[in-house]
Image 1 (cartoon, helix red, strand yellow):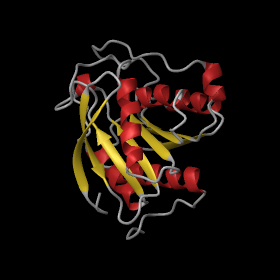
Image 2: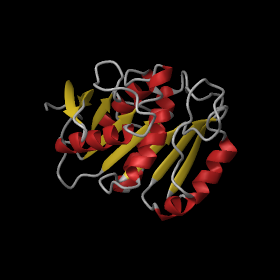
Image 3: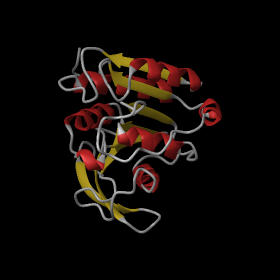
Length: 235
Protein backbone atom coordinates (compact mmCIF):
# COMPACT_ATOMS: atom_id res chain seq x y z
CA UNK A 1 0.00 0.00 0.00
CA UNK A 2 1.09 3.58 -0.63
CA UNK A 3 1.59 5.60 2.54
CA UNK A 4 -1.35 7.70 3.65
CA UNK A 5 -3.91 5.86 1.49
CA UNK A 6 -7.08 3.94 2.35
CA UNK A 7 -7.90 0.83 0.34
CA UNK A 8 -11.10 -1.22 0.25
CA UNK A 9 -10.31 -4.90 0.70
CA UNK A 10 -11.91 -8.28 1.33
CA UNK A 11 -10.43 -11.15 3.32
CA UNK A 12 -11.50 -14.68 4.20
CA UNK A 13 -12.30 -16.26 7.55
CA UNK A 14 -11.40 -19.80 8.59
CA UNK A 15 -14.99 -20.87 7.78
CA UNK A 16 -14.69 -19.49 4.22
CA UNK A 17 -16.67 -16.25 4.54
CA UNK A 18 -15.50 -13.11 2.78
CA UNK A 19 -15.57 -9.99 4.94
CA UNK A 20 -15.27 -6.42 3.71
CA UNK A 21 -12.93 -3.88 5.23
CA UNK A 22 -10.82 -0.81 4.71
CA UNK A 23 -7.06 -0.73 5.21
CA UNK A 24 -5.54 2.61 6.13
CA UNK A 25 -1.79 2.97 5.61
CA UNK A 26 0.24 5.32 7.81
CA UNK A 27 2.22 8.26 6.51
CA UNK A 28 5.58 6.57 6.13
CA UNK A 29 6.59 3.02 7.03
CA UNK A 30 4.26 0.93 9.18
CA UNK A 31 5.72 -0.01 12.53
CA UNK A 32 2.65 -1.83 13.87
CA UNK A 33 -0.78 -3.05 12.80
CA UNK A 34 -4.21 -2.52 14.34
CA UNK A 35 -7.68 -4.01 13.93
CA UNK A 36 -10.90 -2.16 14.82
CA UNK A 37 -13.99 -4.14 15.91
CA UNK A 38 -17.35 -2.39 15.69
CA UNK A 39 -20.47 -2.37 17.96
CA UNK A 40 -23.47 -4.68 17.89
CA UNK A 41 -24.62 -5.73 14.38
CA UNK A 42 -28.23 -5.90 15.60
CA UNK A 43 -28.09 -2.28 16.75
CA UNK A 44 -26.73 -0.77 13.54
CA UNK A 45 -23.05 -1.31 14.35
CA UNK A 46 -20.58 -1.20 11.47
CA UNK A 47 -17.08 -0.01 10.67
CA UNK A 48 -18.51 3.33 9.52
CA UNK A 49 -18.84 5.28 12.75
CA UNK A 50 -17.19 8.59 13.72
CA UNK A 51 -15.52 7.09 16.80
CA UNK A 52 -13.88 4.33 14.77
CA UNK A 53 -12.87 6.81 12.07
CA UNK A 54 -11.22 8.98 14.72
CA UNK A 55 -9.33 6.01 16.16
CA UNK A 56 -8.24 4.90 12.69
CA UNK A 57 -6.88 8.37 11.91
CA UNK A 58 -5.13 8.65 15.27
CA UNK A 59 -3.41 5.28 15.00
CA UNK A 60 -2.35 5.78 11.38
CA UNK A 61 -0.79 9.11 12.39
CA UNK A 62 1.25 7.17 14.96
CA UNK A 63 2.61 4.65 12.44
CA UNK A 64 -0.03 1.92 12.50
CA UNK A 65 -1.54 0.28 9.46
CA UNK A 66 -5.20 -0.02 10.48
CA UNK A 67 -7.87 -2.46 9.34
CA UNK A 68 -11.49 -1.60 10.06
CA UNK A 69 -13.96 -4.24 8.92
CA UNK A 70 -17.58 -5.37 9.08
CA UNK A 71 -18.43 -8.49 11.02
CA UNK A 72 -20.20 -11.35 9.24
CA UNK A 73 -23.68 -10.44 8.03
CA UNK A 74 -23.05 -6.67 8.20
CA UNK A 75 -23.41 -4.66 4.98
CA UNK A 76 -21.20 -6.30 2.34
CA UNK A 77 -19.71 -9.05 4.52
CA UNK A 78 -20.82 -12.62 3.91
CA UNK A 79 -22.72 -14.75 6.40
CA UNK A 80 -25.17 -14.03 9.20
CA UNK A 81 -24.92 -12.71 12.75
CA UNK A 82 -23.17 -15.30 14.91
CA UNK A 83 -24.22 -14.19 18.38
CA UNK A 84 -20.70 -13.06 19.25
CA UNK A 85 -19.42 -16.62 19.00
CA UNK A 86 -18.64 -17.02 15.29
CA UNK A 87 -17.37 -13.42 15.21
CA UNK A 88 -14.23 -14.56 17.05
CA UNK A 89 -13.18 -16.11 13.72
CA UNK A 90 -13.74 -12.73 12.06
CA UNK A 91 -11.33 -10.99 14.42
CA UNK A 92 -8.74 -13.73 14.01
CA UNK A 93 -8.91 -13.38 10.23
CA UNK A 94 -8.68 -9.58 10.45
CA UNK A 95 -5.56 -9.82 12.64
CA UNK A 96 -3.92 -12.07 10.08
CA UNK A 97 -4.81 -9.76 7.19
CA UNK A 98 -3.63 -6.60 8.96
CA UNK A 99 -0.30 -8.16 9.86
CA UNK A 100 0.47 -8.76 6.19
CA UNK A 101 0.84 -4.98 5.75
CA UNK A 102 3.40 -4.49 8.57
CA UNK A 103 6.86 -5.93 9.22
CA UNK A 104 6.71 -9.56 10.35
CA UNK A 105 7.94 -8.71 13.85
CA UNK A 106 5.66 -5.69 14.30
CA UNK A 107 3.16 -5.77 17.18
CA UNK A 108 -0.61 -5.81 16.68
CA UNK A 109 -3.20 -3.84 18.62
CA UNK A 110 -6.87 -4.89 18.62
CA UNK A 111 -9.45 -2.21 19.45
CA UNK A 112 -13.02 -3.19 20.22
CA UNK A 113 -16.04 -1.05 21.01
CA UNK A 114 -19.08 -2.46 22.86
CA UNK A 115 -20.00 -5.79 21.19
CA UNK A 116 -16.64 -5.56 19.41
CA UNK A 117 -14.85 -5.25 22.77
CA UNK A 118 -16.48 -8.44 24.04
CA UNK A 119 -15.44 -10.35 20.93
CA UNK A 120 -11.93 -8.84 20.87
CA UNK A 121 -11.19 -9.80 24.46
CA UNK A 122 -12.31 -13.39 23.98
CA UNK A 123 -10.37 -13.74 20.71
CA UNK A 124 -7.16 -12.36 22.20
CA UNK A 125 -7.15 -14.91 25.03
CA UNK A 126 -5.91 -17.60 22.65
CA UNK A 127 -4.18 -15.45 20.01
CA UNK A 128 -0.58 -14.57 20.85
CA UNK A 129 -0.40 -12.39 17.73
CA UNK A 130 -2.38 -9.76 19.67
CA UNK A 131 0.16 -7.67 21.57
CA UNK A 132 -2.30 -5.29 23.27
CA UNK A 133 -6.01 -4.57 23.56
CA UNK A 134 -8.05 -1.37 23.77
CA UNK A 135 -11.60 -2.13 24.92
CA UNK A 136 -14.15 0.69 24.77
CA UNK A 137 -17.53 0.48 26.47
CA UNK A 138 -17.13 -3.23 27.19
CA UNK A 139 -20.62 -4.46 28.17
CA UNK A 140 -20.54 -5.33 31.87
CA UNK A 141 -24.18 -4.67 32.82
CA UNK A 142 -27.37 -6.23 31.45
CA UNK A 143 -28.65 -3.94 28.67
CA UNK A 144 -32.33 -3.03 28.64
CA UNK A 145 -32.53 -4.08 25.00
CA UNK A 146 -34.36 -6.81 23.16
CA UNK A 147 -31.18 -8.70 22.33
CA UNK A 148 -29.87 -12.15 23.24
CA UNK A 149 -27.11 -12.02 25.87
CA UNK A 150 -23.52 -11.79 24.74
CA UNK A 151 -21.14 -14.67 25.43
CA UNK A 152 -19.63 -14.59 28.90
CA UNK A 153 -16.29 -12.91 29.36
CA UNK A 154 -13.30 -15.12 30.20
CA UNK A 155 -13.22 -16.59 33.69
CA UNK A 156 -11.38 -14.82 36.51
CA UNK A 157 -8.38 -17.18 36.35
CA UNK A 158 -8.06 -16.60 32.61
CA UNK A 159 -8.14 -12.83 33.10
CA UNK A 160 -5.46 -13.00 35.80
CA UNK A 161 -3.25 -15.00 33.46
CA UNK A 162 -3.59 -12.46 30.62
CA UNK A 163 -0.52 -10.26 31.04
CA UNK A 164 -0.57 -8.29 27.83
CA UNK A 165 -1.46 -4.55 28.12
CA UNK A 166 -5.17 -3.72 28.11
CA UNK A 167 -6.84 -0.31 27.98
CA UNK A 168 -10.34 -0.20 29.51
CA UNK A 169 -12.06 2.99 28.35
CA UNK A 170 -15.62 4.15 28.93
CA UNK A 171 -17.79 7.21 29.26
CA UNK A 172 -18.50 8.26 32.83
CA UNK A 173 -22.26 7.84 32.28
CA UNK A 174 -22.16 4.61 30.26
CA UNK A 175 -25.05 2.41 31.49
CA UNK A 176 -23.67 -0.68 29.72
CA UNK A 177 -20.15 -0.30 31.13
CA UNK A 178 -20.55 1.20 34.62
CA UNK A 179 -17.38 2.65 36.11
CA UNK A 180 -17.40 0.52 39.31
CA UNK A 181 -17.69 -2.70 37.30
CA UNK A 182 -14.95 -1.54 34.94
CA UNK A 183 -12.63 -0.80 37.86
CA UNK A 184 -13.30 -4.29 39.20
CA UNK A 185 -12.38 -5.80 35.84
CA UNK A 186 -9.26 -3.64 35.74
CA UNK A 187 -8.09 -5.14 39.03
CA UNK A 188 -8.47 -8.64 37.59
CA UNK A 189 -6.25 -7.93 34.57
CA UNK A 190 -2.56 -7.68 35.58
CA UNK A 191 -1.64 -5.04 32.97
CA UNK A 192 -4.83 -2.99 32.68
CA UNK A 193 -5.19 0.78 32.44
CA UNK A 194 -8.63 2.25 33.17
CA UNK A 195 -9.56 5.57 31.55
CA UNK A 196 -12.87 7.40 32.04
CA UNK A 197 -14.15 10.10 29.67
CA UNK A 198 -16.39 12.19 31.90
CA UNK A 199 -19.65 13.89 30.90
CA UNK A 200 -20.47 11.39 28.15
CA UNK A 201 -21.94 7.91 27.76
CA UNK A 202 -21.56 4.69 25.78
CA UNK A 203 -21.43 6.49 22.43
CA UNK A 204 -18.85 9.14 23.35
CA UNK A 205 -20.65 11.69 21.14
CA UNK A 206 -18.51 14.77 20.44
CA UNK A 207 -15.68 13.23 22.45
CA UNK A 208 -14.49 10.93 19.67
CA UNK A 209 -11.14 12.65 19.12
CA UNK A 210 -10.44 12.74 22.85
CA UNK A 211 -11.16 9.02 23.12
CA UNK A 212 -9.04 8.35 20.02
CA UNK A 213 -6.09 10.26 21.50
CA UNK A 214 -6.37 8.15 24.65
CA UNK A 215 -6.25 4.98 22.55
CA UNK A 216 -3.29 6.27 20.54
CA UNK A 217 -1.33 7.31 23.63
CA UNK A 218 -1.95 3.93 25.24
CA UNK A 219 -0.88 2.10 22.08
CA UNK A 220 2.53 3.74 21.70
CA UNK A 221 3.18 3.56 25.44
CA UNK A 222 2.24 -0.11 25.71
CA UNK A 223 3.92 -1.31 22.51
CA UNK A 224 6.93 1.00 22.19
CA UNK A 225 7.46 2.52 25.64
CA UNK A 226 6.90 6.01 24.24
CA UNK A 227 5.21 8.92 25.94
CA UNK A 228 1.80 9.23 24.33
CA UNK A 229 1.64 12.94 23.58
CA UNK A 230 -0.56 14.50 20.89
CA UNK A 231 -0.12 13.47 17.29
CA UNK A 232 1.66 15.79 14.89
CA UNK A 233 -0.20 19.03 14.30
CA UNK A 234 -2.19 18.88 17.57
CA UNK A 235 -1.65 20.68 20.82
